[in-house]
Amino acid sequence: MMGPHSPRRYAFIADAVSGGMAFEPEELSPEEVTEQVDSVIEDNEVVLFMKGNELMPQCGYSKKALALLQQHRDDIETVDVLKATDAYREALERHSGRETIPQTFVDGEFIGGSDILEQLDERGELAQKVGQ
Image (cartoon, rainbow, N blue to C red):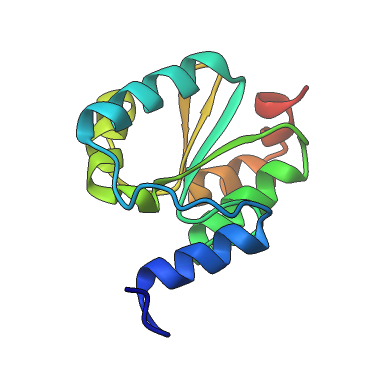
């Protein structure tokens, strides 16, 4: 049952706002997450693993990382880690050596989180790294 303040109700509302009406699984298995992380990093030029999504970032660091990337590129693949945060942290650590969120990958290479993106941007290097 969905009470007025249940997490599933809020997930349903967020899905409805973003254009979807279907419930997503509350949590993905660690195997599903690992498979998704591997394929998303391999299949996309620029990937941001973040808390929330492009329309509704759920933490300041994710919002900052997204904004920095969007200054230089339109086609950023984003992955909301909130469906299985611990599993995403473990899977991402295998690729980057870090568990922190957000994490950015360009052409399969770990670039960093929001602070690193900000430093690269201040030095004028972010546009070159993520440029189209």
